[in-house]
Length: 453
Ligand SMILES: [Zn+2]
Image (cartoon, rainbow, N blue to C red):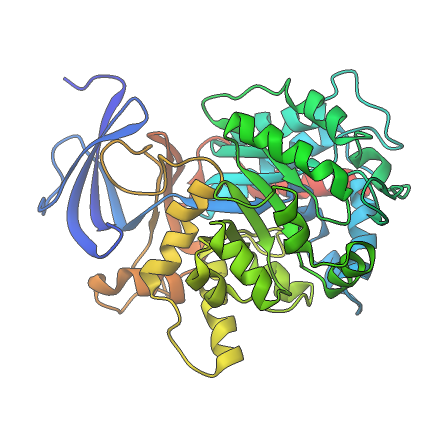
């Protein structure tokens, strides 16, 4: 007799952090892995059979869900990050709690189909256009938390402070422009008050974010750092994505953004710098030495012509790496993982900066840790029962020996090869179909069309 809250999975091949193990049984109870047995060549009676290579769930550590509505629209014409941003604002202007909920539910369902079991949502569209708070001032954030639940994945809502359009002095920034008014709470204290009302749930954690040194005056950084410190919550910040940000920071404060953040208590092991692209050697030492993480978003960084961040040097200096699909030009964490390695190959003209195992760790365990889910992203007893299975018999993945499953997953597979996704012991994606959102492409098309109407 099987207890209703227990379930047995038989994994044809399993990635156990260092190697591929054939024939593994996972016993799942109350949403966690209760036991793991190896050396089981055939499925036990009643077990759910997962054919292919099962990996720990993937963590998408940096997302702006609404950017999904920009897909392809921003591939016409030329420009820079700054011209792209104007198109992005035209979508941000149109979001309501209802339209954002519908879009995010579809985007998070797309993530589940890509093997993602937890998303870090860097959320800054807080208020109505013009900056008037909604009746429930957290209506937008709560819409995102509900969307993740409906799509069957975990979320860390990184509620973001966004107060100014540019740097000016220690205590004030340039006022927000007309698009940015709805991002701003007016002050870091008002932001803290609003976020303190947000409630964590089984699938949802609350973290903090500083949009960038452009968007938060230096004198208010410590308020955000303290809020995160008191709650032991993750704190994320866009860091040196653009050289213009570095130039403006030097002009206003006489130092780099990384130095400014360090001097105001923002860096540390619960903090993640997103992009960390244009850094000095001193910046790398500050980030690595403080244990601050680095979230690379290679498909977005190449899409926006940002540049290639020094991920190898950052990791060597002590910065754990995570990965995110950020603007969702594509949603494919396997592509993010291989792009980080391949970017480095192009830059250095040498191969093999990371093993496939190290890249998978960035996409799973270290990504989860960056989002405050220290108990996920690994296949071991006690961990949350979050995992995803990659087909090893598709046109992309057939051929290599099973023991090369990690290399196949990272360097040849795509999100289209994700066959199953299980979150907290619940089968969210089965045989490539989402179990909770019946027609994900239609949901995406409808949600994007509603924002264009
Ligand atoms: Zn971002």
